[in-house]
Length: 78
Image (cartoon, rainbow, N blue to C red; front, side, top):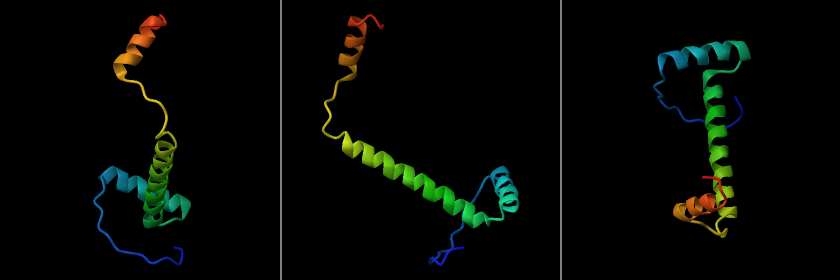
């Protein structure tokens, strides 16, 4: 584990997920904690990327669902 402050937490996992994590832990020589930390980091990075994308499009023109359907119908797509 890296030289990072850690905090203990209790997490309840589905039995099969826990078994899969144990197997992956053995095969990769990573601890279950390391695997969970990596998964959480990846999920948070994905959220951050989504938030950045939303910020970039904040000033983009919008169209209502109804207007989009009408447009698709006029274009022969519906």
